[in-house]
Image (cartoon, rainbow, N blue to C red; front, side, top):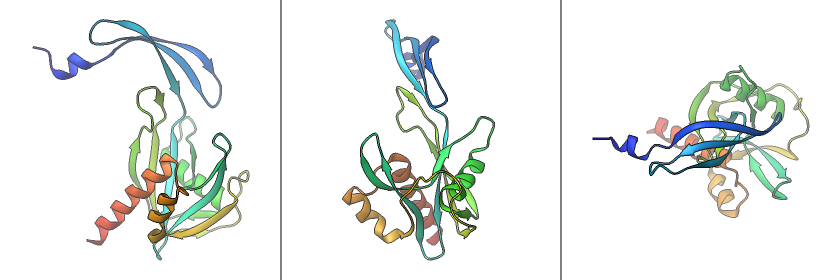
Length: 186
């Protein structure tokens, strides 16, 4: 008798690359679904990302006020960026915080790794919690934020409710960090 896993698994017969550049790879995957039907399914491949939730000893989180052109929308986000080939996710998270905000994180630990759009998009996101940070100077990368502020964790629920925090990495990072921080206080 076949296991449930064997009954529902899609079989991948191959993938044909149809577009590729530094930021995105688009392919058509030759798949067969459990009933035997076979067809091509789009697949979007993005580099892995690392995002950091930096919390200070006053229970504030380091955030950036950013404009996202694709949606013509502003919002508060956590620092983060794409992981270069061969680079460790935690190294990227630490580097991105310093480059984007001017703060060097301390005591960094892994929170969660997730896929924000499973089904058609491969875009692994690695989230980290940093407890504390040292200011080392102005941000060194391209200007990525109009404001960089330490936001009290108590204000986060209202900011989410107003729609001021709306990107998946920031939402999941803040929820995961809050759960980890609360677990440590019990």
